[in-house]
Length: 187
Image (tube, rainbow, N blue to C red):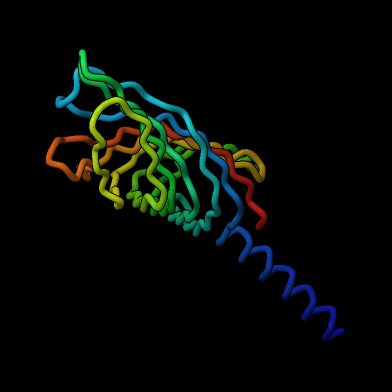
């Protein structure tokens, strides 16, 4: 009988812990554009990212951390001179604080969140007709977004506003990223 009560207590505690902490993989696509007045035109590029997340749930609030790999593309050009296309890739780390605003019962919830994102570009490739623009390897961004949890899936849209000038040569270039992600909660 003691073993039955112990097993029941263990199952109840494991279920409570699974609702408190959730972990899983996340896959994303992003549209990266640049904010600059130093070039005559610029265009956005689409690329991908993947990684893992861990979320701590506290009633209506939650905190989430993500770590992974992401790639970004964009191009800049000068009239009459040429165009430079960039492909940046590297480590991506995000911290999020959020609020569950619309509960959907056992199905899930709708969330609003804000946070901070740090990228370290370990791979920088440029195909250009312009002079090469040296890119700062570390990029910081503030983010805001909305997400939906449906059963074990999590779907998010976030906008990342770059605060780091990624042009190391003195021009002003900041990133602006629209990110769509899908994750799966193992716990």
